[in-house]
Length: 50
Image (cartoon, rainbow, N blue to C red; front, side, top):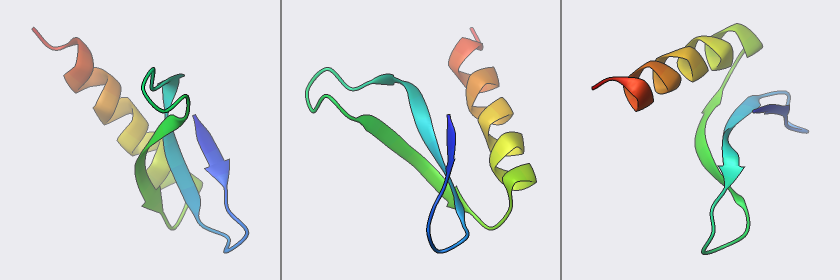
């Protein structure tokens, strides 16, 4: 999940909430939405890799 910050940057959050904290994990902050989307695809790839 990508959200735009007030600073103009984009932050990638985990899709599911962390059961311990009840919040989404911060998976990185990026200058552009394209970079954030690219990283999100990479995260999903490694999550599902055997």
